[in-house]
Image 1 (tube, rainbow, N blue to C red):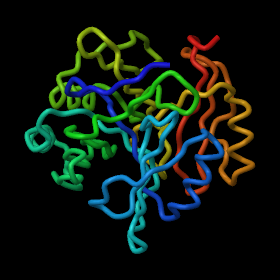
Image 2 (image 1 turned 90 degrees about the vertical axis):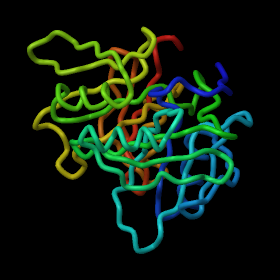
Image 3 (image 1 turned 45 degrees about the vertical axis):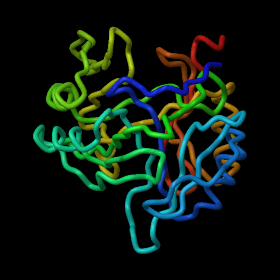
Image 4 (image 1 turned 180 degrees about the vertical axis):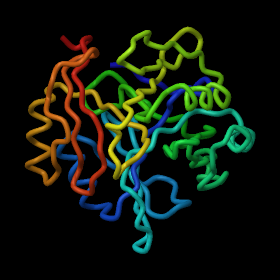
Length: 259
């Protein structure tokens, strides 16, 4: 278990957040699943809470206005030293800005954007709130991966915006890029071609560390969610992809370092 309380290098995934219709019910779901507790957070876009483990902030959940029928999905936020400048770079590289730039009280400044393939992501300029503050234990974000049709063009977009070094997997049947900053892997892009879900399109996937992916998958069903991909062994450990009761999809994984 590690903690993090400093500003991240620009481009580093630093926070994950979810916007839902039923804020109270969603809190109940993740409280039972991960043991999260909740405290109020800044509310520039409406009611919003931060999830805590051991008193450390690990994720955010907000409530959508009743008339906003947007896809319910976890959003990955990348760190920036200047959100306004990053927003302009996103536009210049073919992306779009959906929200912001705007201030989140004294916590920081944010943008919600989409890459050229339509995958939504956030950008966070830290002030009082530096992002996820706990890693390596049950219920904490451990990885972020972009699921898209192919990696080449969109990889260049993220490289241009955030300065990543791209490390491709050399394989005729596996389209995969790892994004590096300072020689350290921070995220990945997985090109899945025609198997990309039509109802979701390109999207960022949040991975949460858990002690027992099989047990978590069963609990998700008990709590009103469903299993998207049954538990199996992956390159990073045993994992399962699940969805909460409002349909937000995420992956739970027991990484090899826990074995």
